[in-house]
Image (cartoon, rainbow, N blue to C red):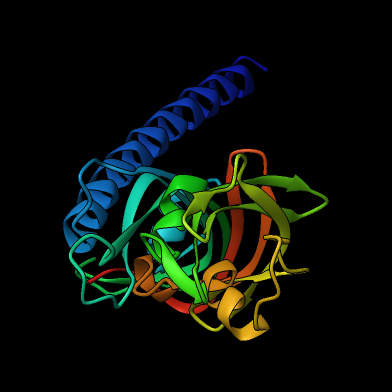
Length: 247
C-alpha cells in the first residue's frame, strides 16, 4: 500500500511538472508567433496570439495545432488607390481563429487549413472612399457626401450636402444605403435618392451617393465574407482556407 501511495505521489508530481512545462512551452510559442506575424505583416504593434488545445507539446510532436487565435488591434489594408491619401484603409479589431495549423519541421512557416473571423471599419475611414469635394450633379447643382453613420437595421445613413443655384441647402440631406461585399470590395448603394429640390438624373446623383472600397491583402490571405452597418462603423466577417500565418 505504501508503495502504491508513493507511486501515486510520483505520478501526480510528474503530471504537474508536465503541465507546467506544457504551459511554459505554449507561452514561449505564442510570443514567438506574435513576433513573426508582426514582422511578416509589417504591423505597427505586436498582435495577440493564443494557442488553444491541451496538451500543446503533443500537438507540436504531431506537427499540427488544433486552433490558433490571432487578434490585431489595427491593420492597414491596401485599397489599390493611386492616391496616397486613400492608398490604405485602417481595419480595427481584427480577430481571426485558425483551425488545423500545420507547420514545417524548422517552424519557419505555418499554414491553417481554414480560418474565420471578424473586424470593423470606422465610418470616417469608409468615408474616404466617397468622392471628396463638391461634384456637379446637374445644372447649377453640386453635392458631396459629408458623413456616414448607422442607419439602423443594417443600413448606413449617408449624409449629402448640396448647393443649388449658388445657395447651400440649410441642412444636409440623408439617405439610407445598403452595404454589401463583392469579392474584395465593400459596396455602398443608396436605397433611394436624396431630394435636393430639383430634378436630377439618377446616374449623376448616384455618382455621389454610391461608392465602393476595395480591401486587398488582408493578413495571411483571408478574404472578405460579409459586411453590416453597426453603431460605430461597418462590421465585417472574414474567412479563408490555406491561410498563411508566417513564412
